Image (tube, rainbow, N blue to C red; front, side):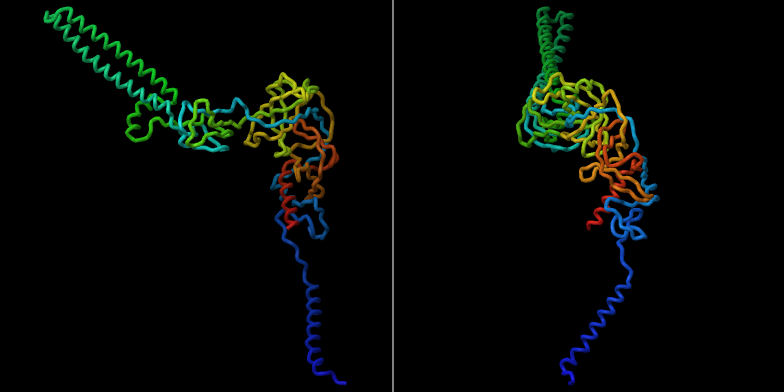
Length: 426
């Protein structure tokens, strides 16, 4: 039988399609396999990571020796060190009360402008709040009145002095009686006393105005201020020291009294760490002793501190005493209300496996170190840490003696590791 026209019509295109697919598959199988581009100096951690096409570990990052040198990465073997035992206590970071400036108005007044807000950093002399000082306005009014009274007294005194001098000449010439001269002298002495009283009143009011922060120059410039239309009773409170606004209670339009605290400025360059130490451990705590402070925000970072006060009372519920330490807040890293761990050295030491403090990094809130295997391979190791002393931290598990642990540049290795980890997940 001959094939039908329909079958003959479809058989040729179908055969052509099948042959095209086969040829395409053959060509594609011969194409070179594409690999993702690598970063200069840092190799990919998964997939084809080397020329030998070996499978890399997800806990490994590769950094060429040249890049290690450029980035300052160094390694040293984990070794046994003699660490001084420490007593650990927990606490919180607080402001140094001696370094807190509480800003209050000098007198009763109405707030008209606020130059700062909560959390702002200010320098000494910066304007904080401007308010209409009601009491200053009253004092300035009294001052102007007293000045006018003094001026009248001085004018009257000059007139009486002239009359008295003329009377003296007339008395010598016999033109007036002695009784008339004595009357003129009495009038002069009376005006002289009134002038002294007026001068004393002006001085008294001036002293009161000086307490509001006005200087002698401000008083001398007062007429020009009045002419300019600016209320002379306006007072600007300025920062007495540099710091951060840690308390703020100033609202425009609010009437305030001298007892009203408008804001507080805290000098954050030095802070307190308030720790709770158990009663049984107080024998190891003495005023003046050097301690170390750590916070979770900066793993591996140690903040030197000094004990300045040990409370004289014990909390009956927790059986702890408050211990106050002073720590220099270099770089402003420490924040108020941070949780802190305080390590207080005791009088004996022990030999333990340890690595430098800065070798330890935090990944997913867990301590890790990076151990070098081959010349360009670094592996992440989760570790269990113990106490710290003299710049070293005890290692309970995760590394063994002789492992080449990254010391300087550990943060750089961590950054490269996390960058690769993010790249793998994209």
